[in-house]
Image 1 (tube, rainbow, N blue to C red):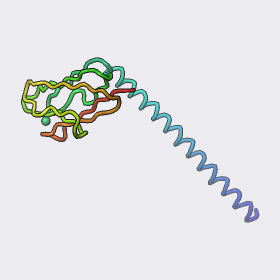
Image 2 (cartoon, helix red, strand yellow; image 1 turned 30 degrees about the vertical axis):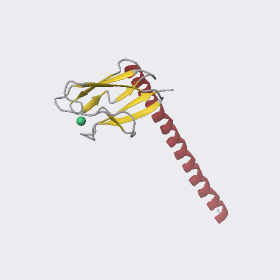
Image 3 (tube, helix red, strand yellow; image 1 turned 180 degrees about the vertical axis):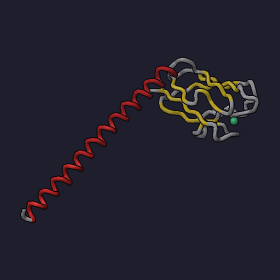
Length: 133
Ligand SMILES: [Cu+2]
């Protein structure tokens, strides 16, 4: 075998291997995408328009992600024995101020998209409201 043929043979093997790897990676990507889409569909099916009430309990917002419609009134109820706030991550948007145990706060979103919020007393407490287009 001439050197040229050897080079040609090995180039073929390398290129072929890369191609096979790319096909596998791509197939795996689409498989994962399908799984993600299925999970999103599940979130929509369980959370969409079911309730616009967010229960604050054990230092968390439940549900932590609420998918709702534009113009719906969202109400947070503090069912913890400690004070919390519902504060939009976007400065100048909503802020409940200190909500003592048993108190509630309502807000109506008038724009589509994602709105993230947190408790200003306990910054690890976070939540999100999604209004699909
Ligand atoms: Cu809090």
